[in-house]
Every structure is written in C-alpha cells, then in structure tokens.
Length: 167
Image (cartoon, rainbow, N blue to C red; front, side, top):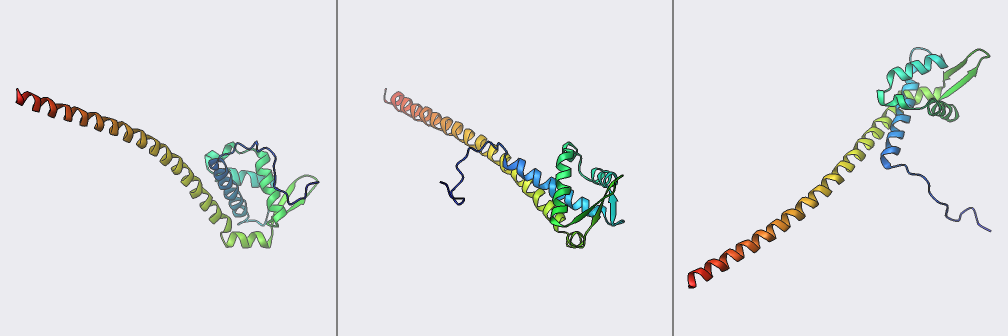
C-alpha cells in the first residue's frame, strides 16, 4: 500500500511550455488587478458591468481568454476573500471586501501582473536568444571549416611556390 508521501509516478500529459505558464499568470494577475480596480467608484457591481469594465481594460490579446477562465478568476477571488458575491434572484452582484481594498491599495496584483509580464517577456527573449545561439554555432562551424580550407589552400600555395622556385 502506498503512503500519501510517496512520489508521484503518473504520466505527465501536460504539454504546457514555460511561455504558456508565464502568459497565463500574467493574464490572471492582470485580470485580478483590473477587477479590483473596477470597484474604485462603486463598492458593488453587477456581473455585466464588471465584465464590461474588465474586457474594456485588458489588452486585446486577452480577448481570446475564455469566459470560464474569467469566471474561475472571479471564483478564486471570492474564495480568497477579495470579493463577496450577493446573489439576487435577478442578478449576481459582487462587492469588494476590506481585504480586496487592501490588496488594491498595496498594488499587490498590479505588481504581480508586471512581474509576470516581464517573466513572459524574458521567456520570449530566452527562446530568441537560444535560436540565435543555435544560428551562431552553425555559423561558427561553417567559418571554422572555411578557415581550415583556407589554411590548406595557403599551405598548398606555399608548397607549390617553394617547389616552383627549386626548379
């Protein structure tokens, strides 16, 4: 019988790249920061107003984010205590909590969004740098072969010149 402390030995079917993870964290932190910002003017917003505010503020590349993912971010914020949901038979309303106000005042998620964005940009630069390194290695090998060939031609030229002078 296995203990709960035994290492996981299952198969990893996760094909997510570090870039995928970085962009997901960036999107999540940016959305949380934007949701908290939506409550600046009113402490209570309905679902439609909150959606409109967020999707008018986020960058255009976020527009491919699914509604389910956005709803999961809202659910996470409720579970963490940043928002309260007031379910009215006609409409769902969200209210910012004191903890949510503190998080917004401290710029916690704005900072996390910026850090995630720079992490994502760094990941893109790392990929580009890796590709440039591969190209550089290939170019260096080609130049090395060309240099060796030039050396052989130079030695052959010297041998021919010396041989011609002896005759």
